[in-house]
Image (cartoon, rainbow, N blue to C red; front, top):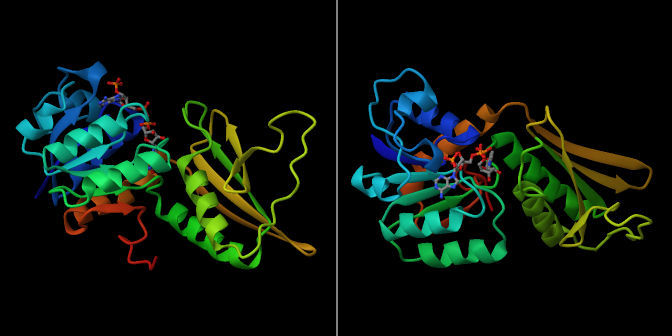
Length: 264
Ligand code: NAP
């Protein structure tokens, strides 16, 4: 049994991950950290369970509970300090929190290199989204003119999404020519954000969960590659895979592809 602690346990993702870990016969949920819920029984967050520990507001609770893998679904403001603490305590980290930039990722890679704990960061744990990014990267080699529309629920704090940024960066590296359309705007922002030369448009609306469409333009043809997470449960299988894989992946791993056995 792998001993798991969840950071951000009272959040939308945190609760779902806590429940899934508690229900998985190979995993054991032993700690949960979420400041606003400190002192509450874990059952308040995840429903009926035999587990009887309380939620903590202190990251030291993870070490006290001998957590082997810490799963972070918190905020872009909290995540770096959390990863530092996990590595200091020799706890492997699986990070789903988005909003980290290339400097943060480089810092995590540096911290994880040669450390006793390994780190997996995945901006998107949905397996279909991983494939969507991969297919889009492949298409960019042949159809370089492309734009990304990402659509998320209205509470998402970061824009563009981590998935859209990562997709744009991968596509920019893959394409042979730069086919960015001219970006003259009569109203600022109308052409979206420029991510590595690819225009990214962020939609925020109630009713949405997490969606992304990559649109390629060719001569007399258009190709759309789209993925829809219709429910947050779509992220859970990928999170569970990462929890089970992290101890065997020394250092830093970015994204789920290597864990799914897909080539870089
Ligand atoms: P949320 O509902 O707002 O939950 C965030 C939680 O983080 C809150 O419950 C908050 O706890 C907790 N928190 C804040 N600071 C903390 C700290 N220092 N230590 C421990 N907990 C802390 O957000 P969400 O929808 O669950 O999303 C969380 C993150 O995951 C976001 O960055 C989101 O973009 C990302 N996400 C990633 C994926 C993926 O596949 N990688 C999928 C979905 C979401 P309190 O309530 O106790 O203050």
